[in-house]
Amino acid sequence: MILCVWRELIVELYPRAELAEPADPAVVALIEKELGLPVPSELASLYGECDGVCNEYGDAVVWPARRVVEDNLAMRAEPDYVELYAPFDELIFFGDSDMGPQFAYVLTDYGPGIVVWDHESDRRRLAAVSLRDYLVRCLGEGGGWFR
Image (cartoon, rainbow, N blue to C red):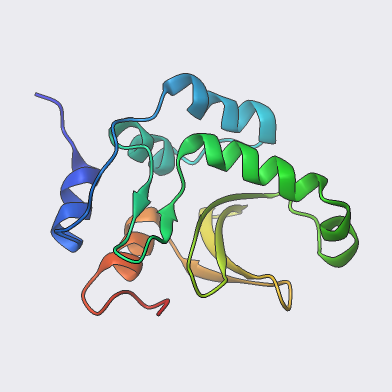
């Protein structure tokens, strides 16, 4: 029997969730290879169960693994971003909200944390201490704390 901890949590928090099949392990491995940062184990574990999570509004709470690679590489290479924002080299962006902010893993001395990035101010602040905490805040009762 395969344990599906993430799928169970997501459906418990958000019963209308439509979950994709697991991500291709080769694409998950590309995240680390292309971005030069380790994929947090909890994110890799989620991708082993489903390739991304969307809410009822179409927000990609967790992007599909291929989008993680593509969007992060594009953000790092965009000339306007290089000029306007602090470097993104230490971040792995993996989700967003229709209200504008994007969410990224950052490695700290205490392990990975999840920051919210505001593209208008380039402000980056700690938003969640774990993927579970992040999902509870995004998908939990009341539509999440980002609304």
